[in-house]
Length: 101
Image (cartoon, rainbow, N blue to C red; front, side, top):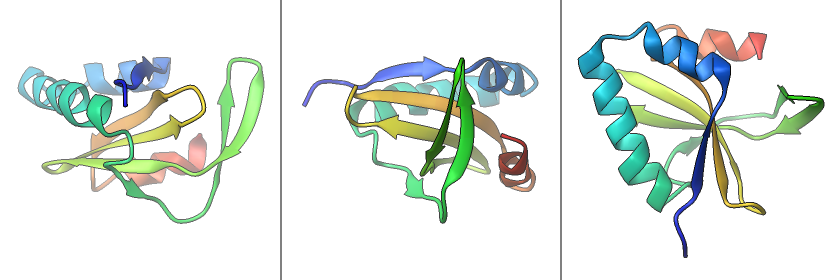
């Protein structure tokens, strides 16, 4: 299987920029190695979420990739082989952001 294309949302970029450079590097490295190779590596989250993409609103199942105490919340579009990075943050608060997607 070919590598999945990694797509970053503006929200993901903003949240990532607020983290320390060491944490950013670890997270980006994990995304490049683990998610690109195996997009279904992350834990499937319970329920479905309503997410706005540009001009479309989708009801989708999301996944969470564990990177130490941090989580990367993403959606894998298997039809286009794309990984959409939606949120990133400390496990204590990142799941609270799901309500605001």
